[in-house]
Length: 463
Ligand SMILES: [Ca+2]
Ligand SMILES: [Ca+2]
Image (cartoon, rainbow, N blue to C red; front, side, top):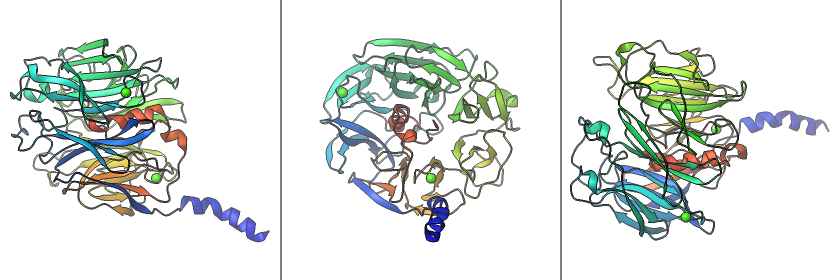
């Protein structure tokens, strides 16, 4: 009896102290060196699962004039089954290999249980000729192109950096039917179109370049604003309905008219509301704070003092001792600042109060729950840190392509593309999880964004 009591007393501590036990759960081999790689899980029909990947031996080419270089390799799409067997691959000979030129999204628009693969491709030899740009649809099992539609042309009279930024977002209308959203523009004019399963147009939105209200962001998180099973998405600080394309709110009204790098919705269970954390990029002459926490009415809960700098880095994660939410805002170093050029100058805050809190690991990285226990880990530079700063996994050199649940295993996985073209999936043998967090349509729809924009970088905080 005494022994049983002793065991029961120790049980909670034993559970919380469960050791990480990382393993390589799956390896896909592209058989060719890669400098860019994206990956999204997909349904191959009849309950079979697989993966689609976009890759190239060229680094991801950015449309910004200060970054753009002539590509020396083309982008390729390949599909693998769940055992790592390659089903097909195809090269896109005229498409610029870059995440903004060529977003990709798998989605089952016809409801037969098998995803189709949607992506933007240039079908002519002239790299900047709108007439050649198409939204293409490929059969997930064979790669055969089964549909091709003219990609809506962005406004012509814009800088290259503004013009060639495209996104795909996949979600659901209020009646549950699929909606594919195509997006042109991030920094100035924004156009969006919503498409039904039969590719008839459901709605369209145009946000003119009139300097009124927020511009877009580098990710488009999907969430369930009213907790009623209907999905919305954020683009910058604006919230849109998948069902109608209606703009439901804009966080900072017309106080902020620029671009946000990060917009992260998170559910605050204590107050029963969504909160939104945004870190901002540019513009505005130093009048507005560069990172703000909002509630779902658009009220500022707190903000950082800094009003200058490019806040490229940010996250919200469960890093407190009991999984309390912590937010990070980090900027690129200023010219002449004594920080490495790719460094991150940032701070961490209690997400509810804005009070500064210290954490014991490098702040620049990707938030992931590797063992499914509801406390986050942070992946950065080939290492996974737990909240106490302990390194629990070293993956070696490579590109992070996913930090979400992409295998039917407990917890979220870390997927890294090695320079030699092997894509390694890391999972935790000891992971256990609360299925409420991952087995939701909102979670799956966010995972679907992994090959569009920076959709692979941000956690889903819907619990
Ligand atoms: Ca289908
Ligand atoms: Ca964890």
